[in-house]
Structure formats: C-alpha cells, structure tokens
Image (tube, rainbow, N blue to C red; front, side, top):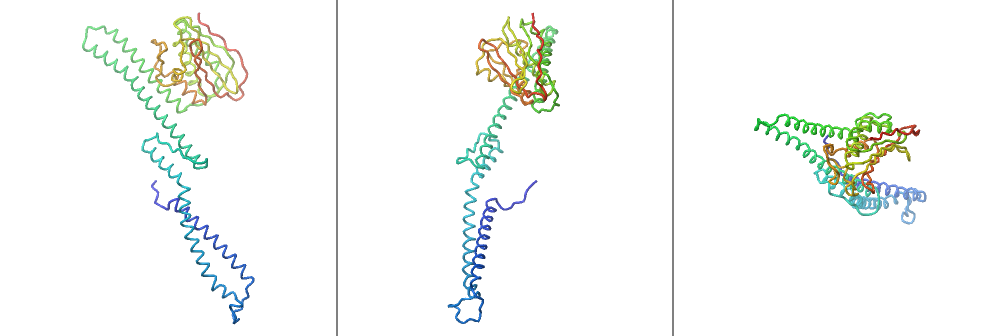
Length: 373
C-alpha cells in the first residue's frame, strides 16, 4: 500500500518541542498574571495611575511584554527543537541508510553505532546481528545451491555419456550400460530425496509426537546390521529410555544417518560402533561413537556442511550423497536440539544429539545390545 507523504519525524518532534515550550510559557505567564492581580486594585477612575497602578494599566503594560516573551519562546522552541531532534534522530538515519543498503543486496555493511548503550544502540546492534546472520545464511544457501547443482550434474553427465556410448557403439555390452545407468540413476534419486528431506526438516512442517530415542536406535541398528557385518564392524546399542517429542520419521532418519555414517566411515576391519541413549541435565541424549582414522578438529567442524564428506575419511560405494550430517543437524535444529561432533583421541568420531525431553519422561531401562559377529 502506497502511503501519502506527510510530516517527517524530525519536524513532528520539532513542533512537539515548540508546542510544549509554548504551553509551558503560557501557563507560567498566566500564573504570574493571576498572582499579580490579587494585589492590584481595580480602580479605573483613580487619577494617579503611576503612583497607584490598577489592573487595566497592568494589562496594558504586561500584555506586549508577554507577547514578546511568547514569540521568543516560539522561535527558540522551533530552532532548538529542530537541532535537538536532529541530534536525537541521527542514529536512526544511519540505521535507515544501512537498511536501504541491505535492500539493494549488500549484506556486508554494518552500522557499528558508537556511544553509550541506549535504545538506538541496542537497535543498531540487533540490526548488525541480523545482517550477519542473513549474510551467513545467504552464503550458505549459495554454496548449497552450487554444490547441489554440481552433485546433480555429475550423474546426468555420466548418464549422457553412457547413452552416447550405447548409440555410437551398438556392439557394446548393453547389460553393463544398463547396470551403470541404474546405479547412476539410483544415486540421483537418493540425492533428490535427501534434498527434499532436508527442505522438509528445515521448514518444520511435521506433527510432533512422543518418541523414544532408544527404540529408534534399536530399529536403526537392526536395519543396518547387515551392512555392519559386511564391513566387519561391531555394532551395539545400549542405554535408557530417552523420550522426546517430534516427528518419528525424521528422528529415525537422524538416527539412521548417524549409524550409517559411523559404519561407512570406520576402520577397514575390526571397527566398532556404539549407540547409547540417556537422559541427563533435562535433555534426551543420543550418542553414536565410532572408531576410525584420526580426524582433526578443523575437519570435524566442517562435516555438517552439505556435500562435505571429509578428504581424510574413507570413500566407498556406500559413501552416500554427502548430506548425511547436514540432514542430521537440520533435523536436530528443527526439533530444538543441538548436534555436537567430537573427534576421538585414538581415531574416529563421537556424535551427540541433545533434544528437549518429553513431558513426564525420566524412567530408564537398558536397551538390548546388537553385536555383529
């Protein structure tokens, strides 16, 4: 809706200051006039007016002086009010300029308002914080879009190459080409589904229910036990009932991603994965600890970024699409939880997810272990 032009805030404040000053002057002069009238006789016929002044003479001499004083107060109020309003609104002008700069796409600008902490300083600091978060979010979205485009372009390019080979070389083994096309297509489908899941979790478009993390840990371990046996990884779950509220499907995806990552990015042989659940300090905790190659804290800090697989980690045909921990972090954040990644001293990683507990939770029971031979 287009608003009609009106008075500026500075002009309104100036008129308010001047008006208040005029009202105060009128009240003061009125008080003086009333006070003087109590002691001045009302005798118009008296001849010696200058020796015995009356109310009429006082009004005749006082009114011009009062008018002059009010005129001076009006000018002083307008000039002083305009100056004071400008000084008071100067920080707001800087905030407005920063807002206009941000609307044109420049999010790197900061107000950095100097001076003591007052309402304008708090507003400017809050605006700077918002700009910093927006800048980081936009940069993350651009990086995510670029990575997603690259990841999606790779299977499409491979598919086109395979189709060109099949068209130009009729004698080529079509079964091999079909198998490779099937694998490439499956990877593209997995990537698309992961992107949709990431978007759904980020929007928080799900119904919250009571969920026991220990049951989800058992279910995820059972479904991934064949993969653990194939890779020679010992997988076990233990812990207590850890009830929270959220989407059972998303929290199961979170747990499955963590266990899958722990199995895939493990030692070539003799690795272990321990999944534990607990309730401590008013939070429901899911922890997945796995052996593996040593990881630096710098590398661990980047593992939750989309399409980050870690150059020092093992890569196999089970490596996934690089969205596992990004989905985990998004799901945890959508459930008002936190994700903590800690490198183990002797190699491997410990991932801890803390979620708000469900109302009335606290009773614990041990979860059954699922070791692989």
